[in-house]
Length: 374
Image (cartoon, rainbow, N blue to C red; front, side):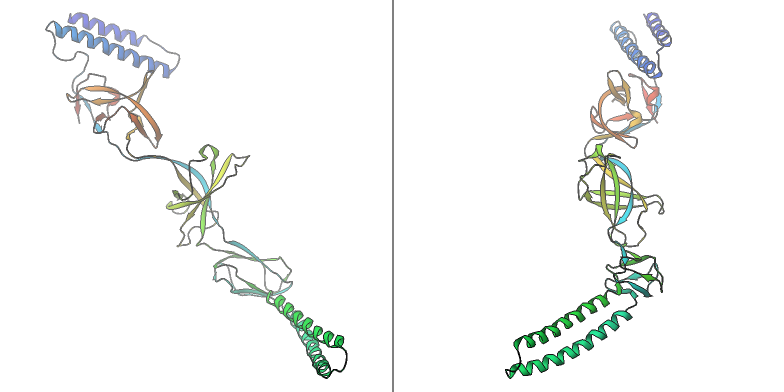
């Protein structure tokens, strides 16, 4: 009987070696299938041998195969989407002249911090000052005429029309002076935000006109990361969700951020939508347009088994892993898998917590083998 078993084993081995498939994948799958069939046949022969008082050990299993094991456990599992982005600041202001004239003074330099309302440059106001002097002279005369006309009118002398004209002249000149002074204040170029002078464009003594760029002012305390995300992830993220941001060119630093906005517009050219995340920048290291990698959490689970993906094997019937039973023999566990990320795979069904799974050496064992745990 033992001889028949040996002949059957050799015959199965020859059959496996003579099988050739068109591709490596098909060959592996076909070979695995035949190995399983051979193992089943060997188990049947072993059962027959036991029934007639033969061997007491499993004929289909080898003994003392050295392996290592890991214990299956439930733990959090996250799948991240990495998208390229950049640092932007909403307070990136290009200050320009409001009044034309010669740039008389620039009191700041690049890199200098400024406060909102601080005068940082001035345009020559000599012409406006002379205009104010002329109008003030006219106003003094108009007031004198008005006082005389008022005295006459109080005595019922003269016409009401002359009185009203004199009064109107005074009010008109007063309004004109107020308007000119308002224009003169526009010769002072003030910081519109708290921030840092990024770049100065104009020079002292140059002629500038309304709209001429003078300098750029940015606020580095209020920055965001902006990334374009493929539309296949539409609806998977929401405002307030935490994300991780890496900066490969800034000492490989990593910071946490919170999604502040998600655009509803899909770019028809790139098929992407924009995700912005607010990030802290108290040290001022994050500059506009610095390269960033935004790690968005696409999927999370808390209580499923998570295994190294390499341990999972496949057949035509599905996926499985090798485990160790209470008698230190190899058993096969059919499984259903979920998401895979970073070399780990989520197990939806098929493995109970605390199950011993074969790690190193999993490719060297078959069902029924007796193993020795290193």
